[in-house]
Amino acid sequence: MTEQRTSPPAFPHKQVSAGALFLNESSKILLVNPTYKPPWEIPGGMVEADEAPLAACQREVLEEIGLAVAPVTLLSVGYLRAHSNRGDSVRFIFWGGVLDAAAIAQIQLQATELSEYRFVTLAEAAALVRPSLHAQLGQCLTNLATNASGAIPNTYWEEV
Image (cartoon, rainbow, N blue to C red; front, side, top):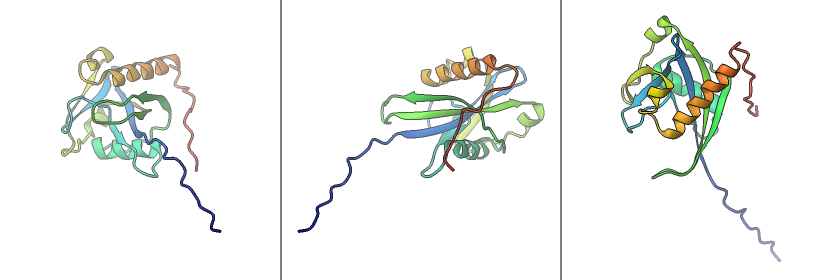
C-alpha cells in the first residue's frame, strides 16, 4: 500500500516593502514622487524573493535616489491592511540619517520611476502620502526624538 501524502495548507502571503527615512539639516522628511502612482513615498520599495528587508532598503535607495547609504537601524514596522487592488502588507522603515547639502546635491532620481523629491514637515507630508505612511513617519520621528542622543537601539535582526 502506497502512503498518500497531502500538501500542507496554503499559507497567506504578504507583500513586504522597505524604505529609509532621511531628514535634512532642518529636520524635514525626504519624500519622492513616483511616476506610476499618485501618493508620494519615502525612498524604498518592494522586497524581492529571498531578499532581506534591509538589503532591499539599501538596493532601492541606491536605485531610486542614487545614494549608497547603509541604513541599519530599524525605526518602525507597520502592518497595512488589504486596500483596493493590493493585499495586506508589512512596511519596514530604517533610519537613513541626516543629509547635509553635499549629500542632497548628490541625489539622482531614477527618471523612469520618480519625477521629483522634496523635503517636508510631518504636517506637510499629510497632504502628500497615504495616511498609513503619515502615521508611521510620525512614529519614526517620535522614536528618533526619544533617542535624541543618537543611541537608537538596533532592533533589526535577520537570519544569516
